[in-house]
Image (spheres, rainbow, N blue to C red):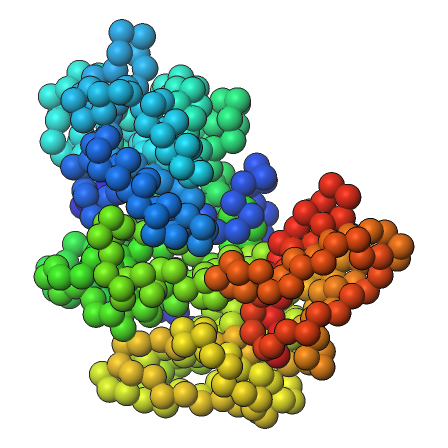
Length: 495
């Protein structure tokens, strides 16, 4: 959505690893990892209709995006009719969505996807504010939050992006908090679990207790960085604006640096493939929502390679929910780190990001990321193991590109739990070429299936009663354990 007023970015100091902290957050049981999906605005703008949306739903399945974790299909602004119905309910545009919104939601659900929609805390949405000022009935939800939340629930909506257009920056902060809290409560009482995405264009400290995710900046442009005359920010600008809010991110509550522009090649000042790869890398290091914004019905191979890399996605989706930070920057050469599994553990995701205009060597010192001794390094974009290194690792990175690494020391062990706070019922670890699964209670029958990151079964076994080992090569795997009614799939790294 087009906004008319920007806020100034603050200069950001380098922040050390010990500053990975957490704060209170909304607990509605949703978005325990950052949401993944697609939104209509970046490629279609206001020009959406039933045929396009169903085509996108089909493509999310046939392209492999759904199975890679992209499950939310979100309509942005201008899905609604120019007036409410006789009972004051929102309704879809009858020309562009002739079968109605519930039928569209049913179609999306039939594809194994979730249905997202757009609204506004004012009386009109952004597009209606700018194009239909003469309308006498409102497209926004001000004063109608309970009614609209129930309408969304009746359509099977799973995700609401809630904008800030009519009132925007002119509204007092207290009014903004009240409006978003009112809709949060309306959704909670709608009878359906609905993800709440706050789109107010900058961070406020009350947002983690109100939304599952919240925009930290104005809209992302399909440019590498902002230049004179641009009304909003490019990818590089948003990276730096979003990074400083890392302490607020945790399972169920995420900083949202806006939708991806990956794959929107060809426009004026559109980013390069390397810049789109950096875009994806840094969103994943920052545990950001991964909401695509390209036309996925016609993706080129470069776009697929970026969006479908399951090892890079796994960094974003790590269950610990820690947002990565920039820990070092020298002459435009950045080292970013995201702890995986636990804050003080022995597995780190690292991004080596080259802001400069020429290829350069970037070094990560293991002591800077909380590791000691010899470590195993895996290149996630190349999907190759680089070997064992002591003290540091260096890599040549092209201009505006970003390497993604997984660096591990010692024996990586993954605890599997029924809930985030529950006791582990099983652990999986790797040593001496074998992945060993150990139940918390001996003589309890369980099953194990080990999958490669592309979903192929590597090993499977049933009716096990004690610790069991499986020879595997180094890499990353999904390990599924089955004990009684508990079935859990977790990512385990071997080295």
